[in-house]
Every structure is written in structure tokens, then in C-alpha cells.
Amino acid sequence: MWEHESKHYKRKRALQRVLGHAPLEWIIWRIRRRNYAKHGLAFVHIPKAAGSSISTLLYGRRLGHVSVEEIAAKMDLRAIETFAILRDPYDRIESAYRYICSGGTAEGAVSYRPEYSSPKFLDFQTFILDWLPGQDLSIVDPILRQQTAYVCDRSGDLVVNRLFCVEYIGLAEEWLAARGFGPLRKRNSNAKSTKS
Image 1 (spheres, rainbow, N blue to C red):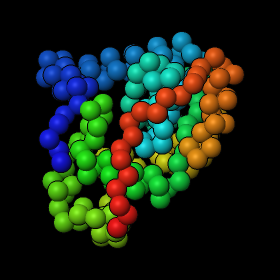
Image 2: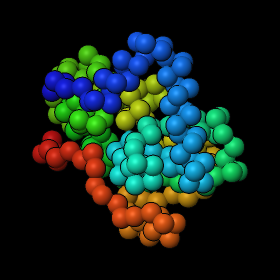
Image 3: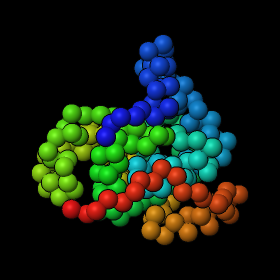
């Protein structure tokens, strides 16, 4: 567990050491805005909900986990269409737990926190019943934030134009195919562990 860092994470850390955090964020947002504007489409990437596959299909790369509010702060949403993929909350949190316990994947790291190696992460049931309820989900690792934090504004109003469910991903594929994108290729999956 936690023995690798992704190439992306290593490059980002190296750039932060050279440029500092603010210039790097400016560069990342410039890349995002260019991709969103080019396609007239902003994909709101909710962690553990087929986001890596969709982002790679649309933009040729992952653009990170950003909320629709963050996108709206950087560009006019009236100029682009926004959409997101939702996932059954139980399946998503179970997948996030497995992802955290594995330290992420070669493409996407999870920021290490000491409690990830604590007894509260030994099994899924302990994680769900003992650790998760005491967390402020607005400040924990993005992989654990509620899906509404990505698609709604602070007052709880839905902001994205279109929502799909990962359980019916075929509908999203058809919608994207009608816009000239497809087919989806599965990425960033981790092997299912035994449920505790």
C-alpha cells in the first residue's frame, strides 16, 4: 500500500517546486478552459464514476476533479454544455475505499493521510461506521466528497445541464456518440475486494 506515486503526481509536484502552486493552477485551468471551449462541452468529473474514461474520450487526458462551481468561476457556463456521470452512492464509496487502500493507480494518486493506514481503514465496515461519519466531507480527499458537491451550487441547486448514471452508461455513450465521440474504453478500475 502506498508504494507508488503516479507519473502525473510526480510531474505535478516537480512543477509546483519550480513554479509554485498559483502558476501551476493557472496553467491547469488554461488547459481545462481550452478543452472545454474547443468541444463546447465541460465534463464534471466526479471521482469513481467513470470519469477517467469520459475525460480521456473527450479531451485525450484527465482534467482532474473539479466541481461545476469551480468551472463557473473560471468561464461562462452559458457558452458550453455541462454534464456529469453519477454512481450509486454505496458502490461509489466502496470503490473509493478500495482505491484509497490501494494508494490509487499508476495514473491517479490519492494524497496520503496517516489515518489511511490506521485501524479504521482495515475493513470497509469499520471505515463506513467508525471513520467516515466523523469527517467533514467538504475538506476530505476529493474522492470522498459527496456527488452533489460536484454538480450543485452551494445552495443545493443543480447546475449541470445533463446527468447520467454510470449504471446506465450506454445512455451517456449514445449521447456522446451523437456529438462525435466514442466509444468509451474502461480506465482507472481497481479489482473488487471482498466486501466486509
